[in-house]
Image 1 (cartoon, rainbow, N blue to C red):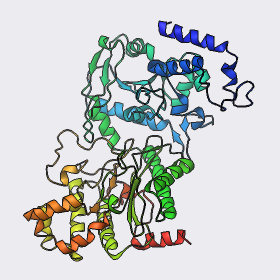
Image 2 (image 1 turned 90 degrees about the vertical axis):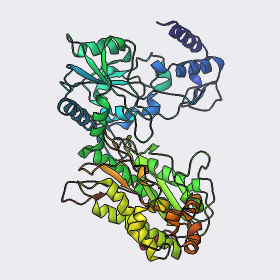
Image 3 (image 1 turned 45 degrees about the vertical axis):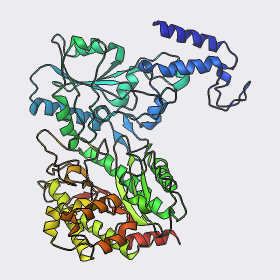
Image 4 (image 1 turned 30 degrees about the vertical axis):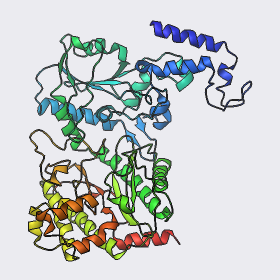
Length: 560
C-alpha cells in the first residue's frame, strides 16, 4: 500500500470512530445530525477525506457521474444502455471493433504482427483547483470502440483475433461509501460485452500476455482534428517504453470507420434526432415576447433530458433573437443567451441533444410573435429553398463543395428576384458573393461528435476562398454518411460594410434594399440527414415545422 493510501486509510478509520460519520449520510431519519439528507458532513475529518479521495485521479471512478447500473437493461442480456427510451446494445461497439480490425488488416495492411490497438478513455477532472466534478463525458474514439461510461479506463483490441480487453481503475473498498456498489471485473465484462477485463495497474503485464510469446506492436491514436486543430489523446501508461509503438497507422483508419455509420449507429442518431426535434417543437410552443433567451434554452434541455434521457447536449445552445440571430455562435460565455425576446424578433435556435454520446444538430428559425413579416419571409424562404434543393440533389458520388455552391446560388437567385441583388448570378458565384450572406460551410459530419471526424482525409485540400474555406469537409458523398444541411443567410453589419467597400461585390448589391434588411438578423435552417445507396432518397431525420405556413399554423395552434 502506498504512503498516500495509508494516510487515507488512517483517515477512514478515524472517521469511523466519530459518532456522526454514518448518521450524517443517512437517507432516512437522522439520529444525531440536522444536516441535509443524503449529503456528506462538512466536518474536518470527512471533509478532508472527501478532498483526498477526489484528488486521487488514478483511482477515481465516479459511477454516479458516469452512469449507474440502472442505465443498463435489467434483462438477462443486461449489456444494453437504456437511460432513455432507446435501447443500445453493446453489439454496436463490438461491431465497430470488428470493422476497425478488418480495416487495419485489409486497408492499412498492418504487417507488424501481432498488433494491438490501445485506446485511452477520458480522464476524470475537477473544476480548476476545486474538488467539484463536472459531469463526465467519455472521450469519443474510446466511446466509439467500447461504449464505456466511466472515466480513467483503457481498451485494447487484438487486431488479429479481434478480442477486446478493458482496463479499469482498481478502487479501494472505502469508495463504496461515496459511490455505492463497486463493480467487480466480471461485472464490467458482462456490462460491456468484452472478452476480458483487468485493472489499469496491470496493463503492461496483460498487454504483453495478449500476444505472448511474441512481443506486441501497440497501435496508439495520434492525429489532428481538422475542425479544432487539436491532437487526439494518445494512450500512455507506466511501462509503455518496453513496447514497440506505432502512432501513425491508427488515426486515419479509425476516422474512416467513424465516417460510415452502421445500422445500429443510425438508430441511435435517429433517436437523438427525434428527441431534439420534439424539444424544438416544445420551444416553439412556449416562446412568448418578453421571455429571456435562456428560458427557451432551458425548455429545450429539460425536454431532452426529462423525456429522452439525454443528459448531455451536443454543444452549447445557440438561442439568438433579433440581431443576435446573426451571431453564428451566439450563446458563448460572454453572451449567455441573456437578451429579452421582443415582439417582431426573428429567433434562430440551434440546439441538439446527445444520447449515449451520439449527437444531433438542429437549427430552427421562427418569429417570436408567431407571424413572419414580409421581409423575414423573403429571407426565410430563400434559405429553405436552398436547404431543400441540396437535400434533393444529394446522392452517392456528389461532391460536398458542389452542394455548398448550390446552396449559395439558390440564395443569390432568390435575393435577386426580390430586389436585394442585381446582375448575373454566375458572376456573383464566381466573385464569391455568396460568402457575404453565408460565411460558414454548408454542413458537417455528425456522429459521436457533433462535428464528427474524417472531413479532411489525407490528400484533401481546404480551399482558401471565402465561404469554401469554412467547409468542414470537401468529400464526395458515400452511403452511410450522416451530415448536416444548414444553409443560412445573415445580415451582419461588418460583413455588409466590407462588401459595400469592395467593388467586386458592391456592383451586385442594391444598397437601399439591403439596408432595409439589416435589422432582421439571420436565418439558418439545419437538418440532419443520412446518405443511402444510389437510387434511395436521402433520409431526413429532423422532424420540425419548416415551411412558413407550417410554422405559423403550429405556433398559432400552440397559443389557443
